[in-house]
Each structure stands twice: as C-alpha cells, then as structure tokens.
Length: 423
Image: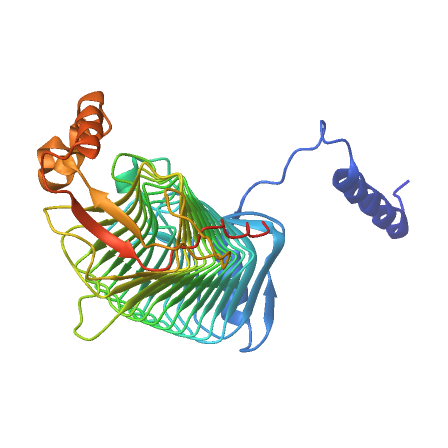
C-alpha cells in the first residue's frame, strides 16, 4: 500500500529536521556549492535590494556591479579556489557584510585580493578574509567605509605577502576597527583625508605606511610586533594621535618615522619598546612648515628621538621621555638645537625645583660626550652600548678630553612624572 502524500511530506520534513539537528559526529556537511549560483542571485537582484547568501561554502568568484546589500549573515564562505580576486565591488553605494572570503590567487601584478573596491560610498564590514594575498584593496575609490573586518594574509615570507589593507589614490574613506594579522603592510599611497581609527595590525612589516598622502587622521590604533610602526614618506598635514605603537622588531625598528614629511602632528601616543621611538629624516621638508610632537610617552626604546642629520622645524612639547638607553641622537654630526624643546619630562634631569612650581630651575641639556662617536661614524654603531664606549664616555664626563656638544636644551623641563593614562 503506497503512503499518502501527507505521510510523505511529514517523512521528508522529519528527515530534514534530523539532518539539521542531529549529532555533530554523524552529520555530513553539505558539499560545496558553485558561486555561480550566488552570482545569478546578484545579477537578478534589483538595485537597492538585499541578497542573502545561503549558509555554506561556495566555490568561485563574485562581482557586485550594482548598489545592493550582499549579506552572508556570518554563515557563508566564498572560496576563490586559489585564483584571482574573490569579490570585486565595481559600483557605488553597495554593502558587503558577514561573509568569509578565502583562497585568493597569488599574483601581485593583478593584486589578487579578498575584496577589491572600485567605487564610491560602499560599506565593507564584518567580513573575515583569510588565505588572501591582499586583504581589501581600494583604487581611486572615495568615501567608502571599511569596518570590523578581520584579515590574514597567505603564509608566505613577509616581503612577498600582500597588504592587509591598501588605498591607492583613494580619498575621504573611513577605516575603522579592522584587525590585520600576519599581512605585509597597511598602506595609504597618494590618498587624502582618510580616517584610520581603532584598528589593530600585528605580525606585519609596516603597521602603517604612508607615501605622498595628506591630511589623514590616524587615531586610537594598536600597531604591535611589526617590523616598523608608522612610516610617513613625503606626506603633509597628517595627524597621528592616541595610538599605541610598540615592539617594532629588529635593529632598525621604529615606532614612527618621518621622511620629508611636513605639517605633521604627533600627539598623545604611546611609543614604547622599539629601536627608535621617533626618527626624523629631513622633516619637515616644505619651507615654513612645522611638525608638532606633543604629549607623547616615549619610553624603553634604544633611542627615544633620532635625527638623520642636523635639521630644524620640529617642536617637542609636553612629552614624557623615560627609560630609554639614549634620549636623543643626531647622526652625521651636528645637534638638535634648531628644533624647539619645551616642557617635556626627562627622567635623566638632574636639576631642582626649589619654588615647587613643577618646572626645573635650570634647563635640561642633553650633551654628547666621547661616546657619541657611534652617531658620527656609522660603522661604529655596532659598538654602541659596549663596555669600551661606555668607559670612554664615563671618563670623558669626569674629565673631558674633547669639547662636549650640547645636542639640545629644554628650557622648562617638567620635574614630576606626568600622570599615567588610563588603559
């Protein structure tokens, strides 16, 4: 006797329920689907509508070329299969969220990426990008939002990984609360007025790398355990504030470096445990400009502040400089006296505050004795910190056999350690 249609319907429903809620040990995951199915959904969608990607793994690549919302609900994976870019956004006003994107190609010339953005006013948020040469790549794209994306590169040698986030000729974008791990660089090139806030970058080469960019805001980020923290080359008008930059690895690791960068503000940052806290190379470069470096904590570095040469135009105020092996270094001869130094806290200050106003009665001077030979003759830097140079420097302080050089003078040194910022 054949079962009734009603019995068949109940049986099918029960089978689906058992498959969906059965023991994990006995369940077999569904096979991967073809991403062409998702592309057909995108192609059929009307502008302004939402396309929800069904849960599961979909193999292939996608193109969003109209203003829609593409939502994976945190349950859908798009696997590029090791070829090309997984998802290209070539439109304005689209949203891509809640997707996992994996398996890009390996071609640096084509910038194989988890997501390529080639449009304006798009929102890319809450995505996970793994095994991707480049993470998110923007080119000539404006007013986009990249928020809360988690990005990991391919397991290559550091120099041949792609960049976690890269902007090229892209202005007025917001890059907020993204996490980059083990990618190469976080790059803004030829890009203006972008806001970079609340991001984490670790295990890469540059925490952030700027080149020929201007008027960007970089605030409240954490760049740790990278080869370098923030590097600004030929930039102008950037503001770097409230960031934690630490453990730039290697002998040349620098928390913040400026090369021919002008009108930069560096304020209220924590710059700790690097080879260099701040390194300046012909900065500021543009005539009649000033770099303002204020309110930072520069601590436990090999060198707190170093100059490639005798340069001018920087103002150092209200910073806390403590626990560094060398406070200030000027390479190739000369001093840092042509810069403004005022109101900083130096843990090496040896003066008094007899009237109790919190300001030292005499200026704080950083003086170069015989031991500064490693600044003047680059080949001797290998011996910095060795017993031989330390003994020579100590003897020269006791009875100078050469004229000591004043590297800088802070006219109003603060004698009480500034209050720790709440973490």
